[in-house]
Image (cartoon, rainbow, N blue to C red; front, side, top):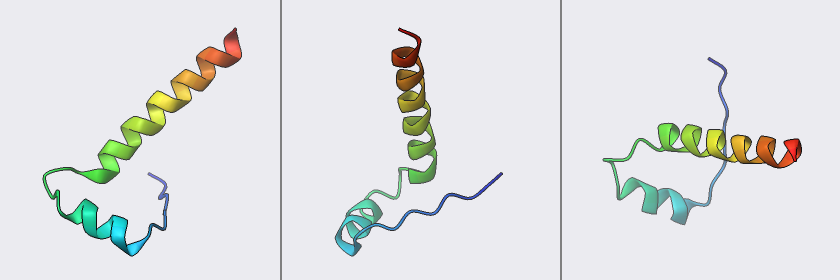
Length: 45
């Protein structure tokens, strides 16, 4: 699987680390999928 690297501010990283129960990479993959589906639906109109 390809790797996608994102740089974020230190403060945001600190806040994300306050929630170790969330697997942020999986969360983002899901959000990317939702956004891409939305964009595809809009393009089909």
